[in-house]
Image (cartoon, rainbow, N blue to C red; front, side, top):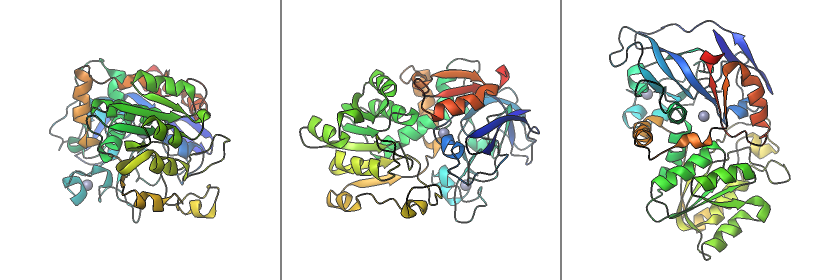
Length: 381
Ligand SMILES: [Zn+2]
Ligand SMILES: [Zn+2]
């Protein structure tokens, strides 16, 4: 089958790889109908992870069951499904307690809990930017979707970024009437705006430097805050009468850079802490890494991000972080899509055959105007 394979920094290729097989009776093979390129794939694309050459990428997957193992009870050939990016066993301590993003059984990497498809340090699982994907513990992991093709562009956001964005607003405990500062208007930040509105926020500020993205944030109801306009924390403090926002979401991650293009991994955290009022809540869902050999400073190479923890303490803010347990939210978000209350597909900018993935990675990585969210269709290849 055809798949998107990591070759080297700034190089992915379409290659022929063996089709996945049922390896355990609890496995399902999914024929991929839609798979997305994620902002977090770009950390691998830019050579900023230890991902191995030859890895099939892709953790945002949906499709139709092609084959079900003999022990699978809930899914049969032809069922339409969303595949959470988390690979989770369903029976370990963390899975039983709802933390499928920290499954203790699926990742052989020493000291790391949690598995994912096609991702650095997240276990031996091939990704789904391919024609077929093997899904372990399928009864536990798969989310059933209505059959047919309706809402394909919305449902494809259920594997990662819509639940991840919602998780950010849950960590920040966004509630009715809150003002919310969302840093980053990439796909996850945009859906954090959408999620905050679904949770009843009164006003959501979206901070970015890309005006095409801020325009989409406005479509979701956000007040745009451009970094061109100067210190964004100052802009938010002023707009809230000196108080600061009630809650904040960080959707940028460790490769944050200032308007001059210099990488400053602490920059967004500093802004976030300043933007949010005393005793406010922060949800940090941008990716950070414990080792980052490509970082600009010695501290950052070891995952040490020197943000203003002193001010966080002084302000009595609470902070939640980590990878999203997709299963905690994907069923409810699916039903909001079906009911017409949620439309995450608004962020889709490009819909391409899988074979055009290498060019799309390049353009998405360069943040070329209009490249917000790329979705790929293997069947069109
Ligand atoms: Zn993703
Ligand atoms: Zn588990």
